[in-house]
Amino acid sequence: MKSTTKTVNIHEAKTHFSKLLAAVAKGQRITICKDGTPVAQLGPLEAPIPIRRPGLLKGRVTIADDFDAPLPPEVLASFEGGS
Image (cartoon, rainbow, N blue to C red; front, top):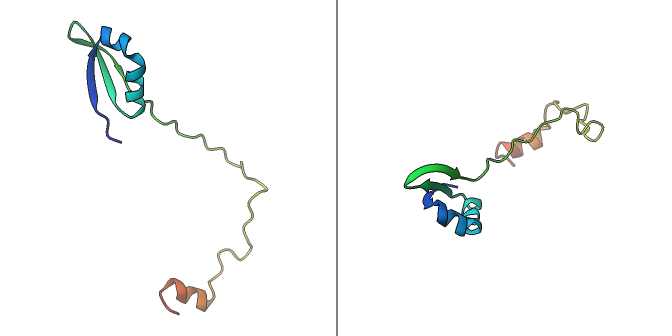
């Protein structure tokens, strides 16, 4: 989602804080200014990167002994567009 930036003064930010947070939740960035000078920015949080835990599914996933065996000719033909 492409973010856009809106500039507001401190009074407007205090008065309409809930509306500004709703805009931020939709991806907009808000720059808050004091006497025309930017002093802060509200923006959406980056999505956290999930932590991968090796072995989480241990005992719940099985792989057949012939997992890497060649495919039967009729199955291979269906992948290659044959009949």
